[in-house]
View 1 (tube, rainbow, N blue to C red):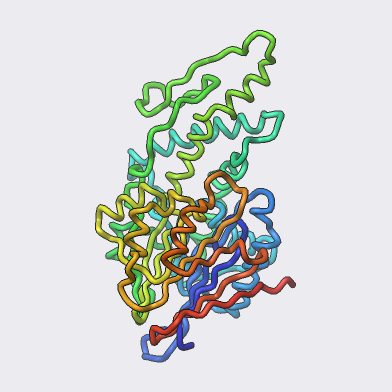
View 2: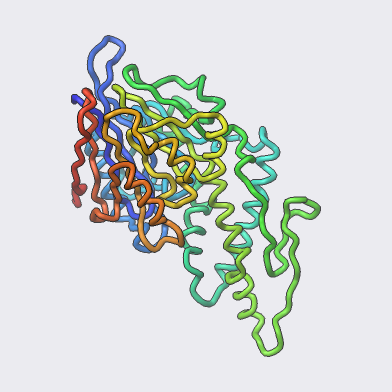
Amino acid sequence: MTGLTLRLYNVGFGDAVVLSLPDTDASGAEVTRTVLIDAGNALTGAHGDDDTLRAVLRDIHARLAGAPLDLYIMTHEHLDHIQGPLMAARKDGLELRARRVWMTASSEPGYYDAHPEARRKRRLALDAFEDIAEAARGMAGSLPFGMEILLGINNPRASADCVDYIRDMSAPAAPHYVSRQSAPTLPQPFRDASLRVLAPEQDCSVYYGRLKPRALGLRLAEGDADAPASATLSAPEGVRDSDFADLLAFRAASSFANLLHIDRAANDSSIVFELEWRGWRLLFPGDAEERSWAFMEAQQALRPAHFLKVSHHGSHNGTPDAVLSEVLPETPPDGRDRVVAVSTADGAYRGVPHDETLSALGRRARLLDTRSLAMGGWFELRFPADGGPVTVLEGAPPTG
């Protein structure tokens, strides 16, 4: 291998990225290192087709040819990023192993005992999630647009087994729980490349905002200043209680706003890292949104990149304008190619992907969009060691 390759799969609404790069071992011999960044998709509809995700995982296993990954990175705990490894094991008997596993800091056992403010805010968010999910289970009609996918990817019960599986992928070695503050102690997995962690903050409480008032008298902990006030409302004369309850639970903007709030807090806990190899700089922000980017800006951590994996499936929150200017400045710092890639799907929920954001990215770099691929297809980018032009190939994993 003479260059670094990056394969980005179309898994529907989700992420799966494989990096292969030349490196040297302790004896100086040339070896190829393989990194898998996330592997999952949504649980519902065409955005979460199991056959597609299984085909992608089979392709990844075939590329490994029985060897373990050198590094697996779980950017955050959303199911559209994590359900693939466990699915491959359960449905196809394909076990992913890794020499090292990186997981977001807040997934460490005992994390919330050590961070009481994060524990309090997470409890408030989980209470709100359960209220919304319970109302959804009792609703007679269809869910509002976007509600089903948000409930699916944020369900902590559904994600727990996936997280546990990833935690054991490097056994008997323990995973590394990654934050910006812990980054200096992380062992570098490569000799000829370097990884720099930009986020998340160790205390994930900084990513939570204030929940909005909710309907139906659904309450959080009494006396908690961040618990939204609620009121018990009665159906107007002539309106059935069940119909009125549905209206309050799902049509009130506050219910959806709270679910988005929960979603953003998890997104902002994403591991954000930069890979440098032979003068190339590649930035992988998981699903980081505005709060996380603000902390990175405050630390003056952002630098121009040659490759950007677009955050949060192309939402505007995932690539704020200020970030765009720092990561992909209008005047490139050198003559190397610049490429951005977005893994996304239409019709998941409003604003994702955000057309204006993708257009802005496309004006500054070559834009690759998984919506142009068949389900299960991939882009493969090849970054040459001499800094020459980036080659992009397209293909699809085997279907057998």
